[in-house]
Image (cartoon, rainbow, N blue to C red):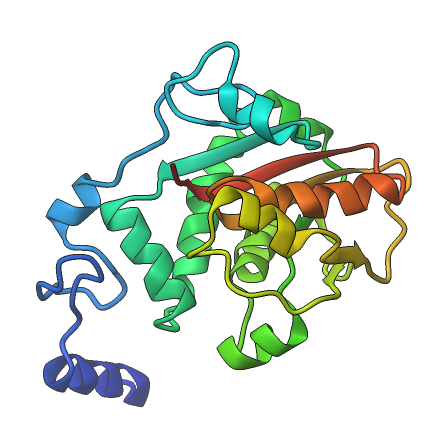
Length: 235
């Protein structure tokens, strides 16, 4: 038996793996949800806005009217609730970075059904400010985007965007405050986006303010179009 396997078994004995949602013990430490919580993952319903992905909307989406989105289309995989929300929190705040690869795999399955995404030239991630990245140790959107780009066999433009201002967390802000908080927060990095189409990756689409501001920066610099994909869609 290898030393690595022995160490993993010892850790699982003294620190058994638990479901990140319900905290019940699970047998396989490579899994993050128990069977029941996995079955409770809520996929984005088929009936959703074709522009912003808002659930249960087919035509005349009030969310799009209120926000005037600059991106071409936003696509999400899961609803941001219960099990999926717990997975995002475990990734961002629990340091379970392998979850990023799992999200990327689920998102890749979605790209195969979205023919419009075949027009993409580069995959990019919504960047964190360098201070926030230093605090967390990583950018969860960056991890997801790199893994997704590999699966799609599309180049990953790591430095296409940068976050030039340190902003407060969007979590507790209302829609108006979110827009004000992020206005002008993004800029083009060491990259020329002229004439190219991008797939912009983030973990959660809530109001869409973050991805919309990032999209505006890309379009202003000459990008042809920007598609958005997130692991989850919140309401």
